[in-house]
Length: 374
Image (cartoon, rainbow, N blue to C red):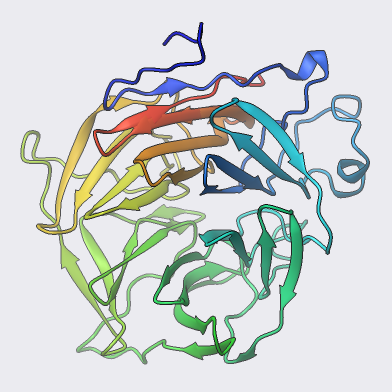
């Protein structure tokens, strides 16, 4: 990958580190390594909100907000994919204080942030919806009515027809598989959760899973509890019309006969008829693999690329052009190290990473940003 004229050529299904202009040592504004954050794409940029890193020393990050919120990051960063520069976004309004394992989606010029936890994890969780206007960085808390979800973190969300769907999560002590819907026009919540029966068994409660909407149903991908991870063979499926659970059996990779390993704390991005799943953790092993699920035939394919390191608790978003960006995460199970790299796709080590990766997935492109903090 050459940057002599600012032009980048990407091979399909190859992970690339994205190397931001400047670095932390020369004073260039840049996010610290983190995990448990969320990113969304908007225009030629992606935005990262929140995150967690307990391994930053007292003199490593002399930021006024960080000194009050550490080990959580109450900050919003913009990464311009053309200039490859980070900018910290300072706007009006009050940011959420629950900054780890929240959920975020992009809607027009806005980022919607729901749920999450402050410290200690689970002692102060959120059931609030916040909206950030990305061009200005201005925040507002959305007042809602109706049967809202219980305050939790690690829930999964998706948007469909101006409705925000929320599934599962944890209080830190109990797990959920409840389904709620927020009508964004009426700003009213509806509890869609069915009562369980022997005829329609309820899926296992979980957190740090992902969901996608397809043809009127919500499909749950992975997730788990502190002591278990859920498989991706038979996907819990919630019919929005019938308000009932079922399971969708998927086909293995036709070349290998294998399925993705059970995992939680992974990322999943939908583009067209495909869902791309990267990384995650099963309690013993972190993953660097990239899988694609074809929603037309429910068949998995393991794509022929892996991120440079395994990653979990990272975040990913896909541009309209089909470029998948992966930022941050945990890369080292031994040292709790995190990443501040951006990748397309990328990274791992229980150290927080400043890794940024990218991958093209419409002809699949993945990119990585290498500024990993060990």
